[in-house]
Amino acid sequence: MKLLVALVLSVALISSASAKVYTKCEFARIMYDSGYPMEHLPDWVCLAIHESALNSNVVGGPNTNGSFDWGIFQINDGYWCKVGYVGNDCNMDCNKLVDDDLTDDIACSKIVYARHGFTAWNAWKSKCQGSLDAYQVTECF
Image (cartoon, rainbow, N blue to C red; front, side, top):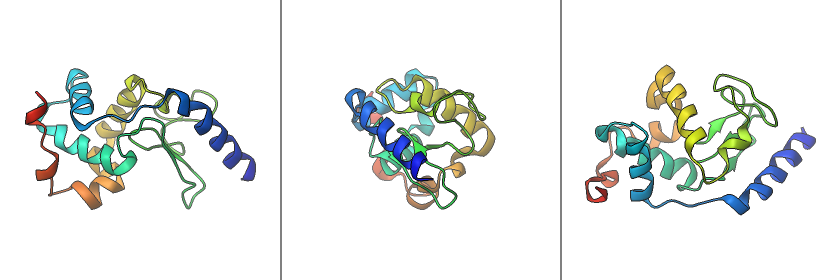
């Protein structure tokens, strides 16, 4: 377990050179340009704000089961990606989720969302569900 924690921390430190903290509007435009419908953008903005503070290189954890959460959407390595090699349901290396290119993050988030909707993310359930007024993005377009 200590080796895994050390590996995750090393990856986080290395990836910090390519990290980006997005503004709400930057993030909303990227999501829209990636095919997300306008009516779901407040949900995605709220989710990303509360999961990662719109920071592309956050690694969270360890969780109670020993897993870690990666990137702007805090995608879990127990289910969706694998550390150091391609694997799990998104068929990707978690390291691809901690850089300033959101392409991989978005591709994986689409898989997670298709299976579970927004309820896959605890932050969305506790902070966003039913209270999206502060996360409207009409001023971004």
